[in-house]
Image (cartoon, rainbow, N blue to C red; front, side, top):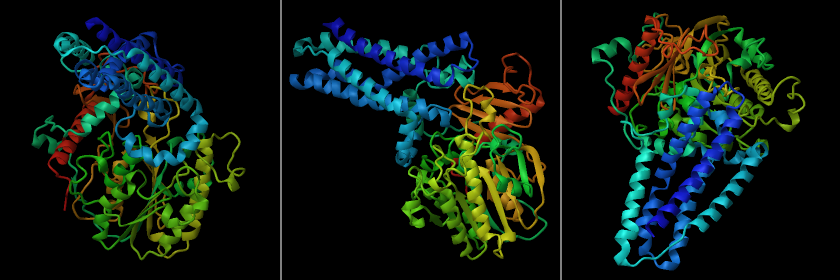
Length: 630
């Protein structure tokens, strides 16, 4: 009886392990089979995949195993098997679904899902039809695997009712033996328990998603979400002050310039779309024409991998260091004077435009946090016939709507316009399908060409307004679009975006070659306005010749710093450098200078110190509510 119960628990465990291994095999075929992964790296990924799977299965099903060994006998006999099967089903099928969602979502997210997937899932439901067309086989596979799982659970779970006198021998002792034995295996025997980032100690960073699973990343991020940031003490306070501060004050020679500001957040825009002679360059005659008269940042990087992370960096100049968006975190109640608040103090009206539903991805609440008063959504547009069937109103309808609203604003004004039609599935309006199905272009590029047309419609409506030449137009992608997830060089290519500042009153073309980032947009706008009061920003004005020229990124447990030559990775959990590449010479990232025992020069040491200083300052500011600067 003792061995029978343990044996059946092991059958369930092994079945789930096989299921997870099969999903990892599909994940490998989709994203890594065509890459350059070596046999040794693949074997290590499989080994750590099993270790991660064991941990995930144990933690996810701990309640079931506790019930099965220790509590089931206290239920009436006729309910015991039904309750056990139901518990297994309720626990494992949703987690199976998330792992299968990641088979498709990884292409856009470039990481296993964390708790932030729940923040965007509801807003993604209208696009379920488009996902079905592209990934129909995943839906069918989920139904098949779910059916097999429920059948297996009902066959394996076998209840042998024992008298109360046998409870210790038949339930408690085998239960404790099973939970302790498998629990130790799940935790691991090293000083630190197995977590999603553990494979980073043994594998290059780009193979971590292969070695882990979505169950553990979801569970781990849920725990992290409910914990507080830890205060870092890499440097003394005096040392930190010499390396980094987000408390800023510009000292312009000229008085405040009450120019309007319009920020275009371009959905899923890769840098390559706007680079002539690049194979991925899309036909964008209008964007090309205004970039030729703009301050163009040739080495611009995004700070995050999702729209809700990019917007926090663009409008808040706050690094997206949380798994979830900042405005969903436990620190969202911290006091901040956002860009809208700063400019309202100067007499500005503030607005945000997005053709999706109200508060899509939480953008309305973040806008309010930034001091942006008016939020215009699909509801305000008022014509559902122009709905694209996925995300919201087609760009060529909604952008002119935004222009008409701005024409009625009394200046000066600050506004953000977030487009949607360049988001997957890149649906074009029926009336413009033929025009923007361009030979030699992919669907992504066609949607960019269509956005270029929509943008021209916007500017045609405002170019004769008296305030037009007194306006700063800022263009930045919310994030890049990933082209080849097997490519190790995606560690830096994935973050490259277009960013430029168009001032029609000046029409001066200038190229900024140093490394810049989304965090630099707020201080740059304030610099162009000759703002002279204290403010908070984790970036620097692109016009500041003394700025470090380092972009920072965060994904999973990895932080990155990118400058004009080096790519530096840092593991938050081990608090150790993860990799160092001189990507300007080693474009494919084949030679990790850390692994090759090549001592980095003072330049890369400066990058490491800068990254640590930003992390330390960020954690301290969040913990002690020190982001309010006035």
